[in-house]
Image 1 (tube, helix red, strand yellow):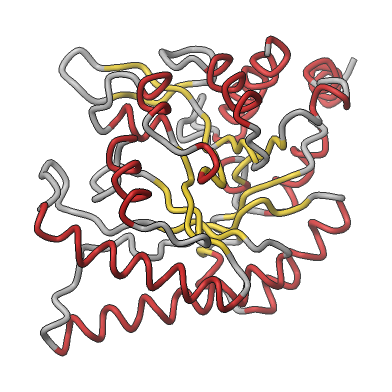
Image 2: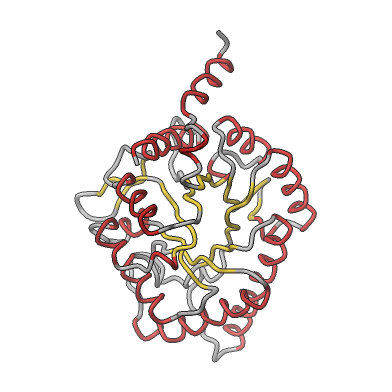
Length: 301
């Protein structure tokens, strides 16, 4: 048997029955497989994955690519029968600018222009959901509590702009951000109740930012109706704090329990694999390893 035939056989055995897969909209972040969207799409097809998440392709972040590239990407997705679950942006993944200065105002204006680019590309690529952030603080530092009112006002403004344009924002909790953990995310949702704003819930990032138990304790802090998108991978806690990424099923996170909670709470968004590690220097190998772990977890739900 050839290596390609053997790989195809392994992929086929890793597939779930269609009825089981239908319980969750599984997706994979394409550049965690390969920067070439064609290669990533072939991977998704092998495993019967019908949704994807797009961050970058062909050497650039999607919002840095011309719209012609977005149209090309849409043709590739349509030809493979794959739908875009969410479009990733780097919107508000910057330190809060001092808008009392001309430079700060210019920085914020560039962020609004970035959001407009995201609207245009999301429309071309066929999604109305866009991943954003809530500003950052220096690595190793802590959020300045005095900045939260200003940040929440800007986040609410971004949600209103999205609503007017026909989109929703799924703000991700991420390390070194003012919204890094489940507790931060709960605070955000309480402060900004705009219907066009929800979460990209990333329990791994919550763990890496000091959350001792993203599920179930962290998840219980959140309003499940305002979780619009989910990132899965796995992590192992470091003895001195923080976490290291690993394959789904190889670490400390309870994927089966979280998936069961999603079903109980009526979660209808995508569960997207964001691999974030490599095997033998290969993102594709690591994504395949993690995806098989995720499929095993889904089969146990």
